[in-house]
Image (cartoon, rainbow, N blue to C red; front, side, top):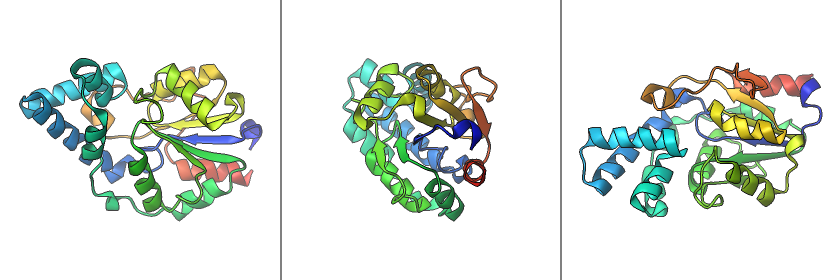
Length: 226
């Protein structure tokens, strides 16, 4: 494992990280966000979409922006936007083997909801491999990349940052983990957030990104075989 020999905790983002963006699962969530904002604010879909992406860029999540600017109740929103068809995710025996072979604890750390995370893990076939899920509700609805959210996750799970590796598809969400001493891995992907033009997903060349991969299962499998 070389540079990962000291890792005892493996922390994975969920959407477009544990499953490939090619599933287009987030497209469903994206459309439902637009619908919710359009109905909630009484604006057209085009205006709702612009606000949706602006809030995502400036507040970490669209939901956080809506809570900040419009005092929106997050729970009905989360239930609505995650009411999607998860069958587009195929089981991944390769990913299951690779994660299962890693030493130590495996955690999901997501800006999404617990129920959404559980359904994704079940579709991938890794629900019994993951030891814990830290979702947006556990973070008091404050999303990554806010430092306090990482601090809450560390406090809740009892992990040691310097013995942890963090896997993310959005580079900006790896800055704080890097500063905390985590080993950071960018899972490079095309689509969804990038298509929307809301933020730059990152190149993997950022100073706070220690490693980058376009194939998570292969990357983890290589770690287990060395």
